[in-house]
Image (cartoon, rainbow, N blue to C red; front, side, top):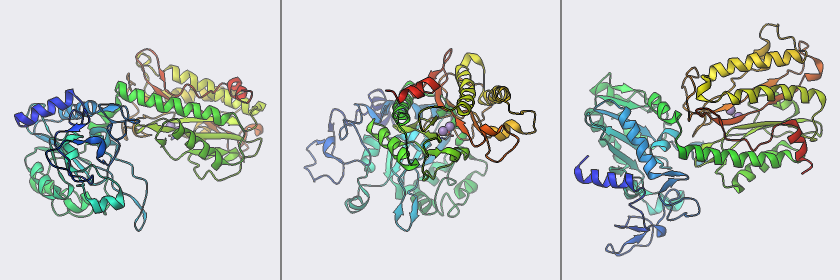
Length: 503
Ligand code: GLY
Ligand code: MN
Ligand code: MN
């Protein structure tokens, strides 16, 4: 990094969003805003970006924040941390998500690649981030290649932030048109000893990155990076493990975002549990509307909204049946805030009163769940796998007390067929592939979600429990000595659920 750039970069790190604040850009961006005299400063509030920025969306973003709750400074610190983890003369290359198509030109809602988002805060497709550590020092160069401003394209697709904003807003040291990556990236690779990337595995054959790197870095649509083979066969390394390490431990700001997602989602559940429902789809809609009304981004994942025996299907997402008055309801849903998810499941009687069998089964699961949550502290020295083993032990004992014959082969695996928890963060199943065997550490966020699903026509189990499904799930941040409960507002004691109808 040149001295001048370094100064600017250091300035931008210590004063997040300095290039945009206070409301004046030092030079005009080339953009779809009306043309202005180049000597005149342009107010950022008059410009259009591909995503909210403080100056255009002060109701969403505080000064200094690049995305909701996360400052430009924190994004720079994340890149610093990745650079620190890279060996000397290494580069990390990350692609933005593609636009995914349902058919023809009909696209799905865009969702940014979580690793790319984590390091850049940039929320558009067709972009490439490069973190290049040229020497042995921790210093590095942050490149960001994006779609350029284009009046005609933006008329169809909505505003883009553009190349200038990649530097001025997103703090890239080097920015450029995504179309140039076929020239730039092979050179970057050639001067690096190690190339950390998960490309092209994450790409669609129609993506701009595939198109522009085909014949240079990639052999074909989904080929192995050709340039790596040609230049340094052993240089290619997966980036995933480094990103998992970074993302596993949450910052204060990330925990605040997850708490906001958790609290608002939990309060939405209480309203939903306070009345009866005729149709799964209306209950699903009600929760989604409440998430948005309460300031969340929307659904964090496709929810399970299951009446009666539909709850026996772990990933039931059709949500299109009627719910009968005496059915149990199982809902696995959560909102997101600033991209950070929450993951909640509640199970309750549609008529507001637990019958004896439902109450017994529910209480058994609840006791196990609250015990496991109390173990979500570093001092307890539990891993997710160890928590799962504990869940199996406790559930088996509780079910035996209810008359289940738990000595049968595979009994607990039949009745409780999924894991008790997973990491959460930007992804519902965060830090994908990270082993669940490591001891939980402070600031790791997880779910605790024991469940019991009693098959309908299986005479091995007591008749009055057959067809019942109970799962209770909360999102929790591991503390040093105490768990931080992220979704504690969603009531779950039997008396509290029943009391909701009397509110
Ligand atoms: N909501 C997805 C899960 O609980 O894993
Ligand atoms: Mn979960
Ligand atoms: Mn869930």
